[in-house]
Amino acid sequence: MNNKPERSALLEVRDLSVSFKTVVETSEAVKNVSFDILPGETLAIVGESGSGKTVTALSIMQLLPYPSAYHPSGSIVYDNQELLGASQELLQDYRGDRIGIIFQEPQTSLNPLHTISKQVSETLIIHRGMSKSDAAERSLELLELVRIRDARERMNSYPHQLSGGQRQRVMIAMAIANEPGLLIADEPTTALDVTIQAEILSLLRDLQQKLGMSMLLISHDLNIVRKLADRICVMRHGEFVETGSRKQVFGSPQHPYTRMLLDAEPSGRSEQPSAVAPVVIDSESVRVWFPVRRGVLRRTVGYIKAVDDVSVTVRKGETVGVVGESGSGKSSLALALLRLIGSRGSIRFEGEEIQGRKSKELRELRRGMQIVFQDPYGSLSPRMTVSEIIAEGLRVHEKQMSNSEREQRVIEVMNEVELDPNTRHRYPHEFSGGQRQRISIARAIILKPKFIVLDEPTSALDRSVQSQIIELLRRLQKNHSLAYMFISHDLAVVRAMASSVIVLREGLVIEQGSTDQIYDNPQDAYTQALISAAVDLELSSDQVGWVAE
Image 1 (tube, rainbow, N blue to C red):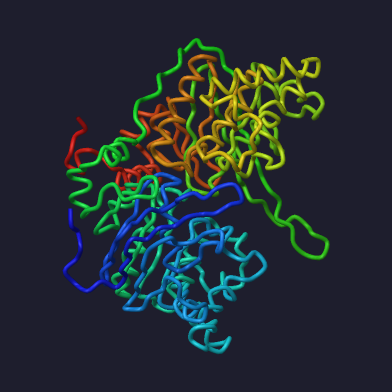
Image 2 (image 1 turned 180 degrees about the vertical axis):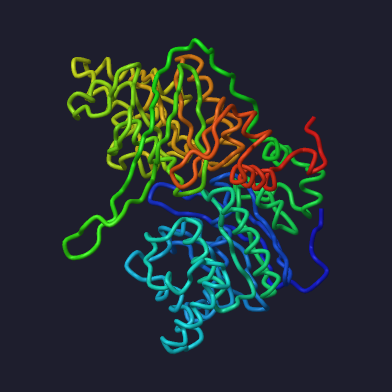
């Protein structure tokens, strides 16, 4: 299919290939891809992690780690200027000026030592030659343009003092500061709350229309692509397997891989637990208040009420979903139940009050309460092999176990989470994101716990990998009668996993009930807004106009 636009393209990429060379081998990341982007158009490149999307995007601005990365072939022409192989002086004129980029993770892309004002001003000083005072004034205008509340007060804030959504808005402000002709948006909404996602998408659309920008959108989330893209390139193993308009790709997908991506939405429903199923963990009026101290003497002048009088019950074999925006208290509640942070109120594990117990008294209970964190890469030690990571709990709680018995148990649990036991002597960086999450799950279940907190376990994963992890968690729950607390901002995943849901806002329970009740008949305006935002982003077969064979 020839999808070459008739109008003159702003960006022309022809036969682009990217290879990475190591001491051991050379791997092909991108293989002879070609595409155009028209003025004012949004082109999306979609595919799973490792497909070559980001490598393709970074090639445009020549941001790959050269010389280990190189281009065996290709041409990248921006506004009649060849960029591939261009001098660093020329590339500096284009980076951040004519071409802007929004990186995937703003927390690691923003400098933690510099204020927001300084970071936004920097590109204005470099490319526009503005004075510091003029750049600061323009930075304020940009922060207001990207709809940051109390922008003037935020000017002197540091990245860690902002929420995820605010940091993403700062990244957008930096990317559009010089009104570029092309904006590269690399996973601009990954791991953001559904309401924040909707706001960021709306913001990008408005800015594109106001500034007349073209956009290259990199994403694994087809819901996001459906909202923004004019044309779509589907990428797999470094190659485009399908290219077409949004209507063509969503309405009549031709390639099996495209159809697989469209079918990878979370599905199924969790069964309601028996009313007589034993209670694994329950709490009454749990409070997590963080003191606010000011003055020379650091007197307490108030409290941040992260969790305020929350009661929850989780039975054997049940999954309780906890939803809400960032800062609503979801993770604080889970950590309080696990006695990993201080709290007030009653917390009972298998009928025994554990609030107030000392660390030594809690040690034996720890094996029955485990947690799977949001970022498996950050929670796995890079210096330990997978075998050592998974077996760590056994070394603490099963000290009498021999090395061979411990090794056999690791092999068994790796098989259970569908990981090849022959890879157990590798390190975390040698695995994909989905595989690392399986390692985290294996580490949690090796002690045969009764209760597991799943804190955003699928938020940074591709939809197809999400579906695999959800099915794995369901199977483990059924086989071991596990009680789950499932924390997520992704309401589609929560609906697929949880039999009951707690909606939190600013530490308070806004609404609580069965999953069907919360999703089909929400009573509170805040819950209605969350559901509405999720439905607006949700991709259904009716909307895209095709049904899988």
